[in-house]
Length: 121
Image 1 (cartoon, rainbow, N blue to C red):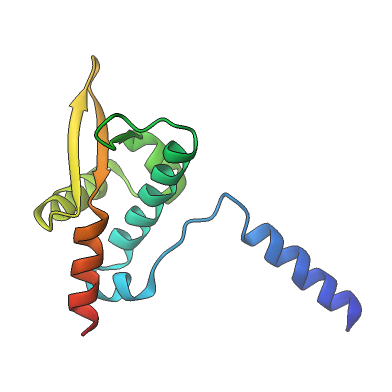
Image 2: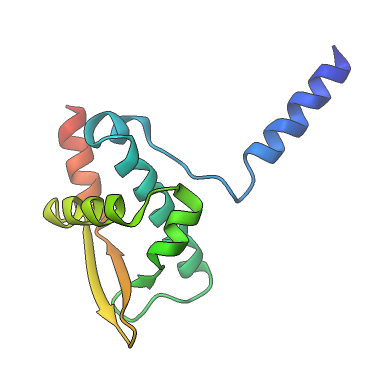
């Protein structure tokens, strides 16, 4: 049993390292798994940008769709559809900056929590 317990601890430690995407089950039930995965990855990128002081003055952060695809396996077309839905829900704001233009994202946490709370009730 001790050997098995050690293997479980090692596996759990590896599974829960920084390479993980956190998916909120209720968000996934309401908005779909792919949108929940996308939001989980964006929240990871937001937290990283915040910790590294890489948010712009308005709270936007940059992540490429290629980076998102690498970590989520969501292709460009799926990401574009998800971004459109999140913008329509007013959860996500997107602006393009630079040449070539890069997407900069801002998550409206208050709106996200409001929608989530309304759907829970």
